[in-house]
Image 1 (cartoon, rainbow, N blue to C red):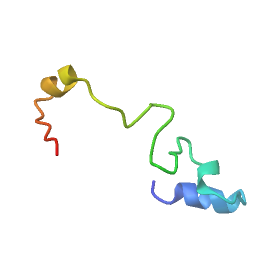
Image 2: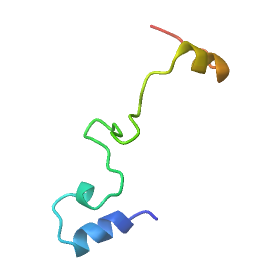
Image 3: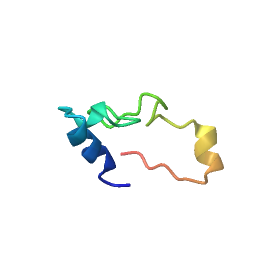
Length: 55
């Protein structure tokens, strides 16, 4: 599917690809629809068996 959104941008004569994307992200790569990325709770981290290393 790569490139379909760019093709639509050209065909619709839009200045930005975000105008034709179904679920555009912000400039910081956040997805406002799903609230992602977000912090995980300690319980979720434990469920996924992930070790978090802090600096």
